[in-house]
Amino acid sequence: MNFKHCITFVIMAFASNAFSQQFEYEIKTNWKFQQEGKNEWNNATVPGVVHLDLLENEIIEDPYWENNELKLRWIENENWIYQTTFIVDDSVLKFNQQELIFNGLDTYATVYLRNPSGRKHVSRVESRCKAVH
Image: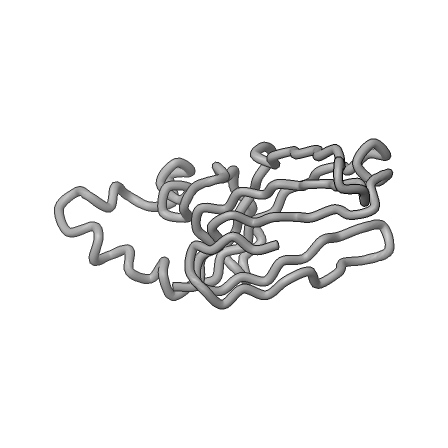
């Protein structure tokens, strides 16, 4: 399957000394998703799964009704893009080290961060539901 599953982002920042202060911020709001190659963005719930997002947006019928599950097999063969916007303020950037942790990216995922100068490739995941730093 090529969809992202159980996505939760956590930003952590650390000072360099042994008694460092830790800041943690979970990014759960303003998520959108789309099928790769399509132009329509829909609201998403993160953490979550693409099937529930499709159902919530009335794009698919209830997969548990009669034989709908068979009609929805196409979902696992598509790539799904999830995005959100968040601002990292100076209180986080003052730390010597920042970590962006992704809990539970499913199967294959490529992570990008976009800043005013363009986007930066951060990580490629080829495993199942694993925390990635």
